[in-house]
Length: 111
Image 1 (spheres, rainbow, N blue to C red):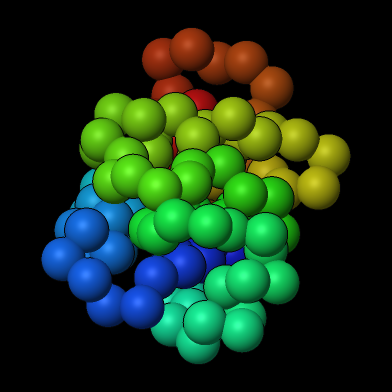
Image 2: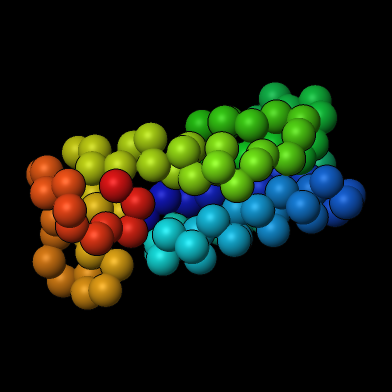
């Protein structure tokens, strides 16, 4: 499970970025945790000068713009099947059997 933070004080672009993230996480049927960070001191701790910004597992991946759905989907897939996070590699229908490891025809939530 990834932690996705949306950094922004509540401007229209920040709200759009949050909507994109939520939409993609729902599409992927992921259990990723979404956190909205609105406190300016907390945002500044990430060395962000313009919002919105997206942080995935404490790594800033987007600064000062709203990501597209396709871009957000790719960012969430980047670490799929990694040693630290294989949660997105489980089948979307039944999260009991892991399909990591190569069956191209399997229906997974993001790989």
